[in-house]
Length: 160
Length: 71
Image 1 (cartoon, each protein chain N blue to C red):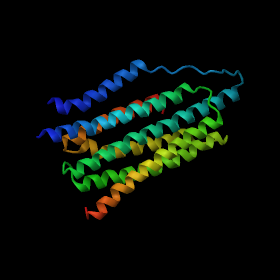
Image 2: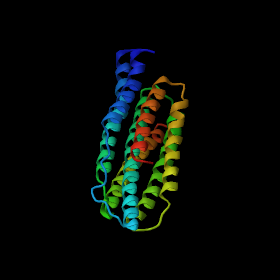
Image 3: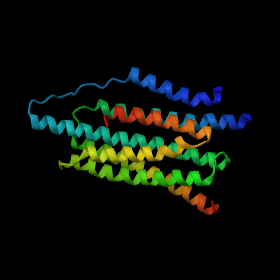
Image 4: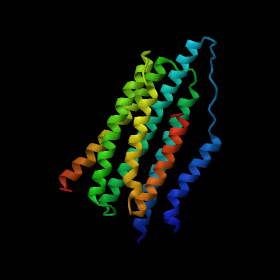
């Protein structure tokens, strides 16, 4: 494998290693002994992390789609593949919005199924990555590796 | 493979990683905010919706271009 092909994978691996070593999640600033209050605090914290993880994931996939657009304009990939990625990204964006609506319910004190909502979004992230990973284009596969590495870290750190 | 193409490849994939770094800073900030309030949840949701708006803007831009070019 040439250096130019290894570089995106190396960058993703370096990023993974750096963040694994460097990231420490501090404990709660206020600890309540009331079980209900504790549950509410945990639910809100999880809601914040889930919403932030979805936000972070969208930033990365939007960048990946923009990159694919650039590659199509350079003639490196074909329009049908870009159309496929675009369709998956539209579904992902719509699903993310629905999940954010559910997460917002936590702020309003509603009893919502946060886990199910998050699982659906993660599934759509995977659907977006699939065409990239199956591509016979080296550049797209490298892009997929970098994007999946970042999404893996995001979902792990977001406790999703 | 010419130098221009190599540079395009490197900058394209690196852009994803750079965006990933910014995204992870966002996540670290969220993780540091222990004891979240209702306002914190709302703020996080609002940031998510802003990211979804930006994603839709990109989706629309690419879709319009492909339609215009008949691809």
